[in-house]
Figure 1 (tube, helix red, strand yellow):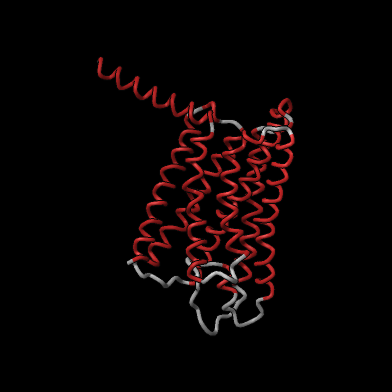
Figure 2: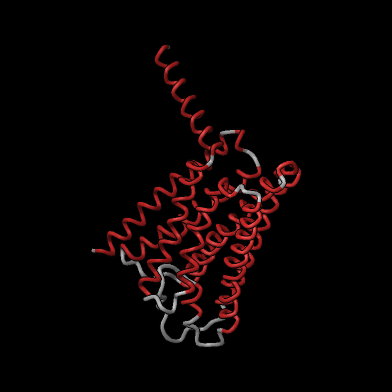
Length: 285
């Protein structure tokens, strides 16, 4: 029964995430004032959160709430590809937003020259290419494995580590990729983000980045704590921690940006004002 309540809770988080991220994307599309390089990155973050949650949560609920524990091998690899791509892209998207804040604060007079629409589109596209390449290599290495014993994955989704550990033949390439991927996807982006905050703090403009800093903390801290202490955490606790880590940030990201970003607040006010005025005009007619 407790498990049932937990997965109903996940479903609630998923609905809030879908509504929030869809609203942010729609707002950026409708308001021409939000079509700036910064909001290209925010739009991509909302899209990644929405797509990642949709790839992960419905299958998790179907698996555990409705006891559909079996998944075909090829479907498992496809599922892993989309989940890992979106989770990895969330980290790199925070890098793009960090760079945007760094240039805006350290080089405000050169911001429009350094951070253009073309630059941000190119940066986001290169991140997607990088993430897809890393994920394809990780998934592709798993196709070399043979499974002669257990085929039960001790995770809440088709996780890379639990799968390659079930292999009966040489798992060295997959193990090496499993060690390299967190460095490329987690540690290097986090190091860059922290470096940008060190530079920003020196010009006494740290308080202007509280929204972005909140996103960074919500995303990185639970993942890094879970992976660092994974040997000391009970498998079931690890599954719960990682599942929450995967769904909580996509739910909170749009809320944080709505509360912390003045442009989005103004855009929402204008949108509601236009709607109220149209309703009044309709009543007069």
